[in-house]
Image: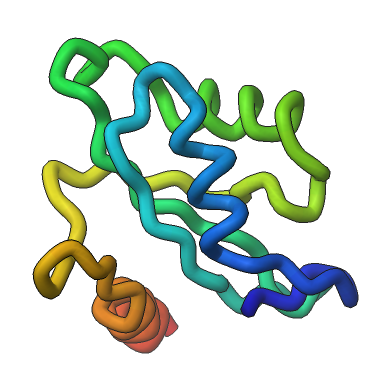
Length: 107
């Protein structure tokens, strides 16, 4: 669960909403620490082949703000060619660990 400004946000729910975007093949959502809101949403998106290089993270964020509650909309979007999985299960933990390492090295 992600806590955004006191709201409980379920990653699976946000993923299901983002998967409704026509460019999205699949996505995984994780929390990112935020000084003002506690946590915010980041999504890692695997785009459908015909959309690769033709859509921006800003377009995804704008679409999300129009199609879901503002506290559920991702603040960060990262495109990936594939998402970490074990069988069919998304491994959000791997993505969280990668993000934690990025923040450690940037501080």
